Amino acid sequence: MTLRAIILTFLITATVFSCKQEQSSEVIQNTSETNEFSLPEWAISANLYELNTRQFSQEGNFQAIIDELPRLKSMGVDIIWLMPVQPISMKNRKAKGDLMVEDIDDPEERKKYLGSPYAVGDYLKINPDYGDPSKFKELVKKAHAQDMYLIIDWVPNHTGWDNPWITDHPEWYTKDDDGNIIDPIDYNTGKSWGWTDVADLNFDNQEMRQAMIDAMKFWLTEYDIDGFRVDVAHGVPQDFFDSLTPALTDVKDDIFLLAESNVESHRNNKTYHATYGWEFHHLMNEIARGEKPVKEIQHWYEKDKSRYKEGFHIHFTSNHDENTWAGTVFERMGDGHKALAVLAATLEGMPLVYNGQEEPLRKRLEFFVKDPIDWKDYAYTEFYKGLFDLKDDNKALWNGKHGSDPVFEYIDDKSIVFSRAKDDNKVIVILNLSKDAHAIPFSFNDKAFSEMNGKQLLTDEEGMIKMDPWSYLIYTK
Image (cartoon, rainbow, N blue to C red; front, side):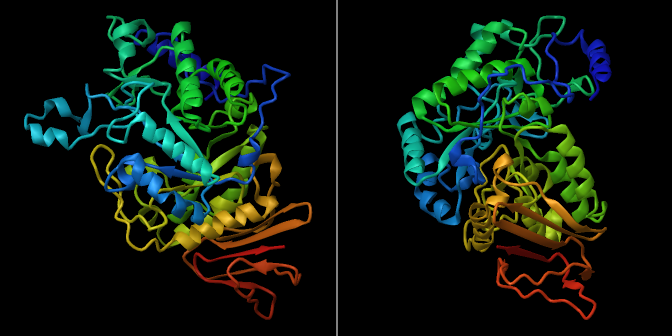
């Protein structure tokens, strides 16, 4: 969004909310010449596994996660991202659609609806459905013992409606002209996002900012977590993050910070290591549907590279939002879901896998009720383990400046060949991202390369690589 558009949106909606503004996508220069913010050594070649505690197991608690740590470790998981672990507000809790739990008369029916974990009832407490503080500490310690790291989801943009901040400090919230606290506003439209189960925080209030920083520091000191995935980071002012990040790294200097945003300043100001790869994800969905040609990948990459000067993206074929609201990888990507997972894991940035993809997950997990993953076969475990090991074993694929940029060797409407090289390591990825068999004019005869799955490089008499629909080859040396 341009600065002019932001100003116009502000003028239109100023009577509804205070001066809190969405961050412009324009680059904001780093405000600190001495900022030593850098990627922790343990995250240089790391991957990310998003875990929904409620739906991860029948029990829906921390103990069930502890029991599965050895399996996750054997799959190659490096960082576990837990969706919010705090209590969930009861007031204005959503049931389904626009129906609130408070509007349901049957008490047994009301019990079914557990609410959104992003409607945080208390920043400093643990959701009792998941366990108690001692059990969460045990989870963190046992993850560390397995040489894995744990970050938690943090929701700074809004709170649940019965969060103690509302009672104790109503001035910390955004209000309309009548003095009523409001739910968050989409600054592109000036209208509500529809997140009526949460109350919008006012970042013009300096006391609230400090309380937020203190709350996040608490989780570092009390539980020794390894960082945060920050929800709706695009709705929070950049100057808050300029203060937040040094405050957190003063407490623990090797944390990992991920922003759910496409805001350049989050990385360019060195306040986050990584941002969400939403734009690339949507492009992959469009390619899977046949709506965009594969050559758009190079266009996206070149534009993205010009915007971001620091850090990297998180890339994924699924996450909690996509699975619940847009569909499973099978619904959105069909037969292309594996090839697109290869692309997401190798083009640039850090790969993310959502819990259940290794089963695989063939249903949309409900968001407001208990709907556990039906674990049976773990049939895709070896596939994702192969991608995780590929990244770990090849420095060309490592994260950010520790890896290398892709070189586009060949690209057309249906296929792509790219390489990444770092020191004496090189990876070549060949993908047919279409529903048709396709021949690619690319070949090499270097016997030093080995293919990830031991496949032969098949070429015709003209030296064309013959690729089946939605197929891939990965060569490394």
